[in-house]
Length: 90
Image (cartoon, rainbow, N blue to C red; front, side):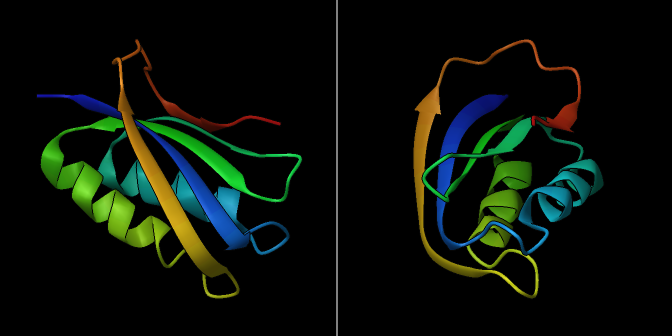
């Protein structure tokens, strides 16, 4: 069963390749959605996949790429949308 999560990642997550690394992890796991920087310095993600895919993805979000310093990840389940790919929004 496909689920949809809205995720906000806080910490040192901009200027450290977080969005590009998220895109690569999403492609690796074959999940769909979007990632974008927020004006407050956080990163916002919408992701859709099955339980196994999402657990692995969320575990990765808590670490991020090598230069990131993640301090908090908030997750909210929401309505599944018709995403067909994963992309970075600018």
